[in-house]
Length: 112
Image (cartoon, rainbow, N blue to C red):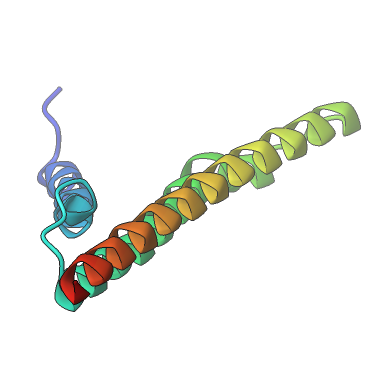
């Protein structure tokens, strides 16, 4: 069975979205300094959180709300979702902290 053209289009759109996010965040790993790069990284981080949230909703929460389960299964799924969301939030705050650290180091070295 051949994939439909719409499936390929969706696949490439998803690749393009994540490629843009990686391109925007790349200066965090190889900083050159400047306010423009800081702004670029902050925009990339915001898009990263939006895309991770949408991906999480589409793959986990939407399917979870469409099925009926016992109370124990619902509670276990809720705990799993909380752990996943907590992990994403911790990684986000670490990335923001690292970005701010790089930015302030660049500002400090520029002032000397």
